[in-house]
Image 1 (cartoon, helix red, strand yellow):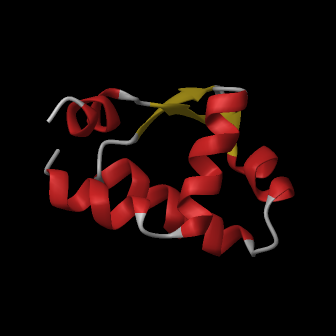
Image 2: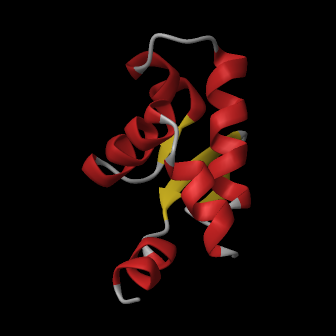
Length: 81
């Protein structure tokens, strides 16, 4: 969980919006997140992947659904610098 990747992930407004949505209500599916953004399902998936690679979110499979959860630790580490 490198800080550079966190900054890169946070640089995009769409990714920040995804994090805001998860902050409002954690544990959302791709379909729920897609409904909130003016972009394709594939676009949302790409942004979620970048956030996950940066350690800013985690996922958990529940049945056939993959739920996304905010991981505030990397942001807190930056704040504590």
